[in-house]
Length: 134
Image 1 (cartoon, rainbow, N blue to C red):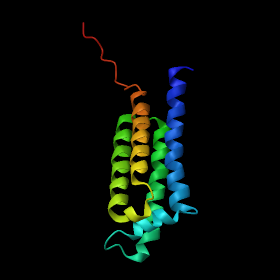
Image 2 (cartoon, one colour; image 1 turned 135 degrees about the horizontal axis):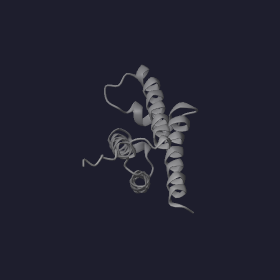
Image 3 (cartoon, rainbow, N blue to C red; image 1 turned 60 degrees about the vertical axis):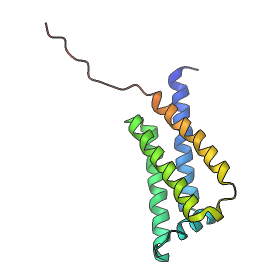
Image 4 (cartoon, rainbow, N blue to C red; image 1 turned 120 degrees about the horizontal axis):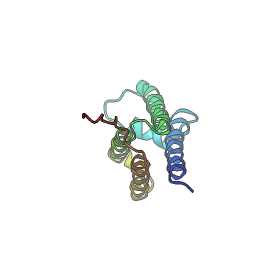
């Protein structure tokens, strides 16, 4: 399989993960454990839980589309890294009792981050060719 197809397949896998997390886990039908984690955020009004879950879900869907676009792949990987680390930290801080196996979550997300950065590394950086002055 050519390198470009392998990278494209990996990008699809990353995008599908973001799509699953965004659409299925946050928006429709939504997972009770993820709702419970958001409900555990201090000072967050109950009325803000559903809109926040929908906003997070839409952002996750947008990240998946960004990954598929292949644009600014290293920036996309950096943003994804911040989101994965932030979501894990938030989940462990505010909803650890809703996460049955925190160690498994962290290990799976380390593998996910490795795939994210593999996709980013597979994209060539496009730089304008400098004209040689004669």
